[in-house]
Amino acid sequence: MKTIILRSSFQTDEFVRTEYADLIQRLEKECHAEIKIIGDESVETQNFASLQALPDAFMIATGGVENLFKRIWEAIDVETTCSPHRTKTVTMIADGRNNSLAAALEILTYLGNVGVEGKILHGTNDEIVSTLLETFQEMSLQGRIGLFGQPSDWLIASGVDRGFLRQHYGIETIDIELQRLIEGIKTVSKTEAEEVMQTLLKRAKAVEEPTSADLLEAAKAYLAIKRICQEERLDAMTIRCFDIVKACGTTSCLALALLNDEGIVAGCEGDMQTLMSMYLAKRICGETAFMANPSQLTDKTSMLAHCTIPLTMCDEIRLRSHFESGIGAAVQGVLPLMDYTLFKWGGEMLDRYFVTEAKAVETPYSDHFCRTQITLNVNLKPYLLQHSIGNHHVIIRGRHAEEIRRFMAEKSLVKRNEV
Image (cartoon, rainbow, N blue to C red; front, side, top):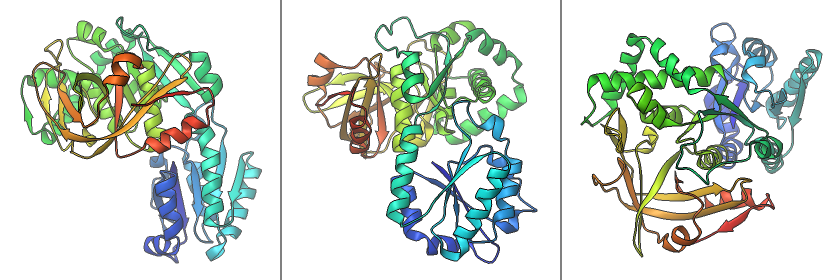
C-alpha cells in the first residue's frame, strides 16, 4: 500500500516520524505501507509527476498542506495511472493532531468540487488501521495481468478461469501477442540495452556461459517487455518464454528477474496459477517471490530450483545460460539461509492452496537442475507426491503463512492442503 504523508514547511520529516511513530510503524507492518513524506516547501521545486500513480492513501500530518495536495493531484495523470477497475477514490488519514483534520476537510471539499470521491479515516490508531485493512483487503488483488502468448504446452493443469478472476477479484487479463514482443525487441536501441547490461555486470559476482552478445539480447528483451507492461499498465505478467528462445535466440529470465525487482509481478511459462501465487505474495505479504520447480525430495528436506529469481532476494548472483536450452542469460542466485514461506494457490477457480514455513539449510549447486537452487528443511513428499497443486511453487522471504491463511479463510471456496 503506497502512502504519501503531507506536512507543512513548519515541521520536518523527523517531527512527523516522531509524532506519528506508532501509527506509521503499524501502517508499515500491518498494512505493508510504503511511506513517502512530502513537505509543502516542495510545491515549487518537486516534480510530482514523478510519483507516477495515485497512492492508495494520503496521510495528512499537519495543517497548511491543502495547496501541496492540489499540486500533487494536478500533476499526476490520474486517468492513465488508475486501472479501469479502480474507482478514483481518495483515502485520507487524519487523526486531528496538528490541524490535520481541518486540512483534510478542505481537501475533501476540493475533491468534491472536481468530481472525485474522497473519504477521511479519523479516530484512534486501532480504528484507522482496522478500517484501512478492511478497505484494501477487498481491492488488494485488483489489477491488470498480461498474458504474453499461451501457457507452455506441458502445463496441462495450471490455468485459471479468467471470468472468475474478473468477477471475484477485479482482475483484468490482457492477451498480448508474442509477435508484438518479438517486433519490439528489434526496436530497442543498442545504447539503452548496453546501459542495462553494464548495470547487471556490476551486480553480478561472475559471468559464466553468456557472451556480451547474449547479455545484450537479454537486456533488449527486458526493455521490450517492460515497454509493453508500461503501455498496457500491467501489474503482473507471464510469458510463454520458450517461444522467445526459438524466435529470438534469447531468454526472458533476466527480464522477469528485473521486472519483479521493479514491482511488476513476472512469471514464466504462462503459468497463471503460479503467477497468482506470486501476485498474492506481493499484494498481501508485501514480498517478491521466487517461482521454482520442486526438484529433489528427501524425508527431511526439499530442494527447489529455477532459472530466474528477483535479484533483490539474493545475497549474490551469477549470470548463467538458460538450463534447458544452454543459450541466452539466466540467473544463478544465492539466497540467504533464513526463514521462508512455501506457497501455492491453485485450481481453475483458485479453490485450493498450500502453505508452509521452513528454513533454508543450503543453497546448493548442481548441473542437473535449474540455475538457482535452494534446500528447505521440510518434508514435502506427503503433499507433493500425492496432492500437489501443479508443478511450480513460490518461495517468499520470511514467515507469512498466517497472513495467507487469514486471506484464504475469508474466501469460503478455498480448500487447504498442509504438510
